[in-house]
Length: 158
Image (cartoon, one colour):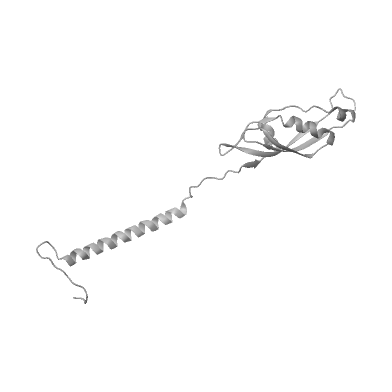
């Protein structure tokens, strides 16, 4: 008998207690070992699984002028300014635009173009509406460029 350990034996109720304690320890050790193996297996499996998380959707998406033109629903043609006609001014006004998720023109800035034509281009484009652009099945704001071409009418003689 080991020093400090006492063995209790009850002979009339089955095997001695020391045998039951020994079996309990073996069962506990086996269960703990199985649980650790299962946890290790889950960790290994988790390494190869793609984590489930929400996909980041940017608030504003930059798109090309061609894509923006394909989304155009309502276009108001600009009115050729009288001063531009008198001065034989024609050309292209390039605008930088922000379009809301609902398809309204929110912000406009002139990038380039003849000064006499810029205000007419801005006034017309502010009235344009677009179909919503969907990203991950959700409408998003857009940034794009818009080109407004001012060409003389065939009847006008420059």
